Length: 169
Image 1: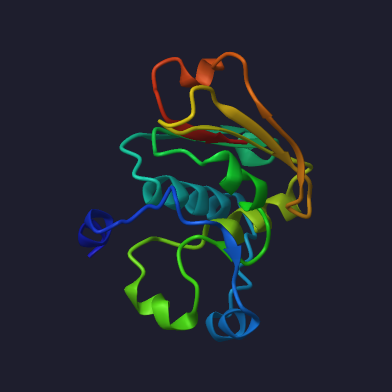
Image 2 (image 1 turned 90 degrees about the vertical axis):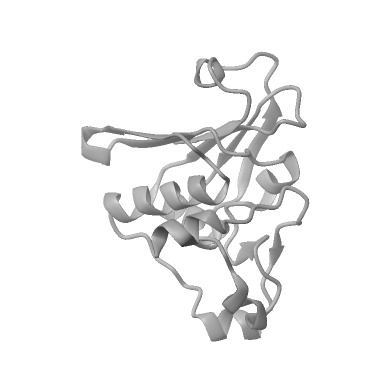
């Protein structure tokens, strides 16, 4: 059941994001494509749940055609994870096809984000982990390549009431 699945969610702040081997990509048919607003929102909510969020908010501008924003209070992403989180076939959740049956998460973070990047002019992520004293801001292009990564000097309004979490626009 979904409740059981959520209770066994595992997150890893220390596992590096790495590209899956080609044979693993082929076996799992990892070419996930986000085709519409609802599937983009679903994928972003699943990422939030995988990060251990207890609160997730979704804001759509012009029914999601102008902007989708998903905000959560999960564990956040490290600066290292931010560098590759939107690249295709990058994940911290498994290293080989053999591990797929042991997954206790909703999905593959980089797959959804890369697909969303392809449909957007740019994707912006603001995130903070409990280890980072200040949040980080990352901006990605349509190919999922990192255009900008910076540590913010002060926490944006999105983090006024939370110590960790992620905002994706």
